[in-house]
Image (tube, rainbow, N blue to C red; front, side):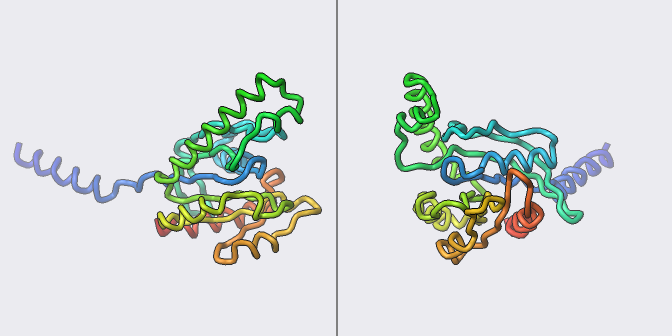
Length: 213
């Protein structure tokens, strides 16, 4: 009986010692239509065979925080398990008339605008729970017009590691340099989430940041 108790005791100790680290909460933030969900889908497709969310040319297609549990990413023989969190596009103001340009009916446009606004509030609340954040920017647009700088400030204050992704490098108007100039203190990785261009460099950067969490 005593031997069995000791076996169970030591089994408990070793299970705690070798228990795998908690899943890293990886959040995707950025302005509407920058490619957050496209990048999240690319990662999920690569490692789970499934998409994470729907993508559309209509802004604020993602209006609620979306989750994907237990996404195990492998890079150069190493594996890290993430809980991926895709957030609605951050904007300072959402006008329902913006949706009318995409032939969305007025009633539906007002509902979408309300949902998108609530989604942004929810996204900002989630900052407290993030272990690592990827900010996705459209490299064809002015970076100063795309993201609320205060969010980066909040991440810095919380000491949350940040990786900035310059997306859509497959397009002619793409300029990684303008994003590098706007955020010189951060690592910038240029990718095309749509076509998977430079995705290996993205994974390498994520692993670098995640290993210190």
